Length: 122
View 1: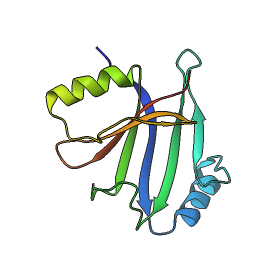
View 2: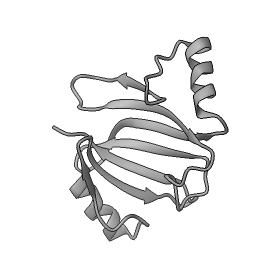
View 3: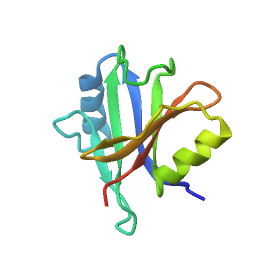
View 4: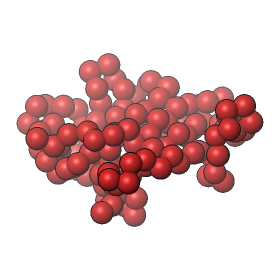
């Protein structure tokens, strides 16, 4: 069975993403990168990493969800998971997106939260 193997990231809306990132850097020591988020390296035995990233409050990136956050999970077999979720009738994008960062599929949970499934590049 294809499955989640880790947390890929937490993405959330903020009134002022830059100021919020600065606060986290100053008070909690997060190493905020130039693009506005933090990349945490994970277990070298599993490909990928974890991202923490504030987005503008009016972002459309989480659409069609109206939730103020989106969760990204790392998965071991995106094609297999796509087939499993499709067979189960889960609401999701029509196809997997390929990019330089890996492969992505976005789905919706029963409460309307956008979930991003990510298979890192090999």
